[in-house]
Image (cartoon, rainbow, N blue to C red; front, side):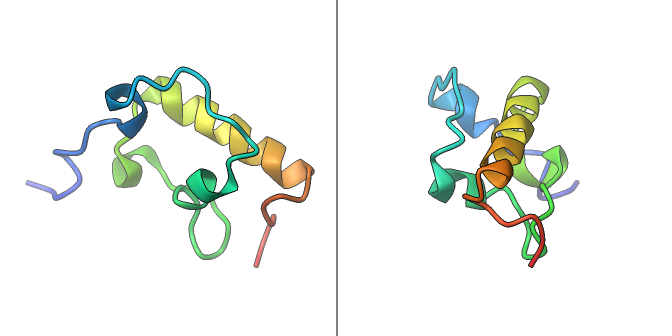
Length: 70
């Protein structure tokens, strides 16, 4: 049994409908040291929120709020 199997989606538990691309402190938790988006099995997010999270991270990158690479 993996340690990642028991994780629940943080966004579903807090009933967050919209992930804001301007909330950089939240988005930084979901990218690696090399600025890659962490996969679902590491973060524990559901598919719906993982897709919204990826879009928010990509938008923040285009506005230079997050780096593309380190």
